Image (tube, rainbow, N blue to C red; front, side, top):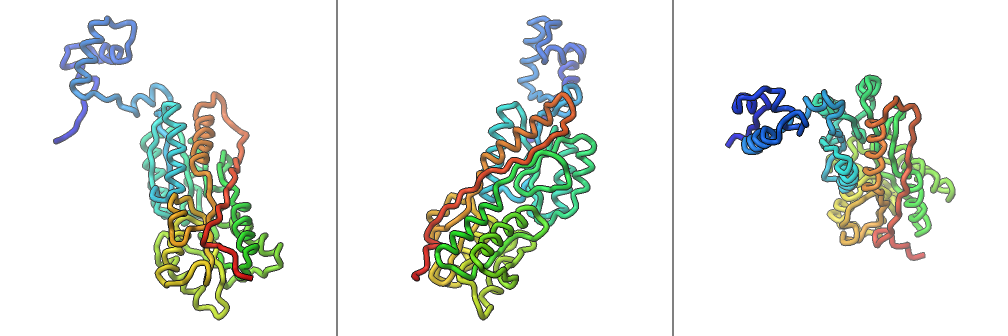
Length: 345
């Protein structure tokens, strides 16, 4: 069955009215009689009339649509961010269009082009792990498209940004392992070009330096696509386990890398934390029931989505050009569980 809708012109032809009369009747204009309004609206409802959002946006100046770009919605963190975005957007009368990059810079560019083609009023974006060049976003920004970054941001575009306290989250996680007696802490992380990688590495580095521990490049491994493919994480684990001086703990810095590392260590029958402790960034609601329960850094995803949307709506609805922007830093939470139980000393 084909699902199709009719236009204002179709209604006008069917009811032998002018297009202007039908348009005004649908907008409840005082110029049109109540009887004509009733006839027009009943016919429109019966025949599946739907307003054209693009045509409306040209008249009203807003499409009432926000574009969202994330890596994958299956990621618990991004799901929570999207829920936060929707809670604010819907309350303000805006719809959202969600796209996924799957960590591909090419797909990110295509998604943004698709969104702007559909006349979005503004863009909320977390960059893919492959993205190094944001010129396409700079061009849109110069053309006046409101853009707000969240989580993975770019310093090359002056706008609002909402992030979590990546430095402190990583510092706290590494400090927790050190306090538990772990001394050789491996670091499996995202590619070095993205903002969260740099901030999280800085926290890891600071905690080690404070404890007098060396920074060993041999146990710092970058996953080129943020663990999008299990093979990336598997290669990292195999590389660490092949060392003569193996790590006694692993700190992972993304949801996907963390849960995949836990899965692979269990698959290899490596006892956690007796042989290798594990702590990582993850917002999964299953952290308590995993085997073992997983120590993690939790990010306020829902609040991040809310804050980012509020800042974007401020840009969209501003009467004058905005020249002052802020970077909002939200606190992380360290949750310790069985995967980092202290070593017997």
